[in-house]
Image (cartoon, rainbow, N blue to C red; front, side):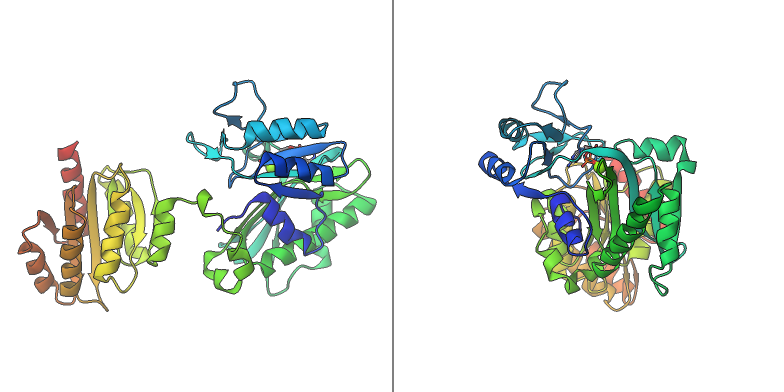
Length: 399
Ligand code: ADP
Ligand code: MG
């Protein structure tokens, strides 16, 4: 789960992290009122969307030479003008895709006199089972380019969660950022505060870009992206309350209601599978046969009729889907029960695309008989390879 920049900053402030003052706004009037509460005379009006690259982004509705989603305002009147330009319009950035995202919230914040921009992020590194803190002296809007052409300017410091954040980690951050004296101390402190927040909030990603040195010698967090491990949300109701469903894929929201693990992908073959491992293998074998999966969908252990019906509906919402491959292993759930669920669901949703079903496991013959006698044009498959070949052939025949 992701949150907006202003929400992430409010969370970080509780851990002592230095952030510029700022207030969120949903309307132009609120943006003006927010600016009036700030000291001025410099304000920054920032589009709040769940995507980065806003500064260099473009609004679809504004002329091509107009500025992006982070605007420096020198007066309250400018704050008002920028808020009018941004609210309700669609911001396209390198991270939103071509469709862009509608801006429904703004963050009006103190303009900071920046001496230098740094980069600091944290992720859970599965390879080392540790938290990796990634830092660079080259923060700002071109960090992707830095990573690409001068990777030596990016340092990684790993923190063993059993040991926790130690003073030497702080010194390593200060050293990597080439800071001395008081700024070096501040870097160690802010790194520790960020690490504490990351662990306490069960983040899976935290990115500060830029972390800035101000002209008066302070380190401040100017931009934040934060995402949370969804398996931990049950213990963070305060974080769940920050969820903005308008930023999420409607199909993924629907799937979460039925406890289905669904991720939309770019291909044309809808997949319904039980078990994440089998789902991955199914996607691989579709690719091996020359087509692409339209989604990842794990219906889980109890593939009930209700769940299977919901899954069919979610897959069929995607207009790119030209065929569906169901690949289910009947272990805890017997194949005949699953087959009945598939038949009932296929009838209910008026299946409009070819459907290939591969069942394996307990009562498999019974299950296959139910599918064969259903009167539906279900194509049976015997194994994973056979299933992939058949659905690819079906989809290509339609195209
Ligand atoms: P994004 O990464 O989505 O483009 P940022 O919040 O990083 O958005 O803003 C882009 C750039 O705008 C920053 O690198 C920084 O130079 C400038 N900026 C952002 N917030 C402020 C601020 N409060 N004061 C001054 N400059 C800012
Ligand atoms: Mg940024």
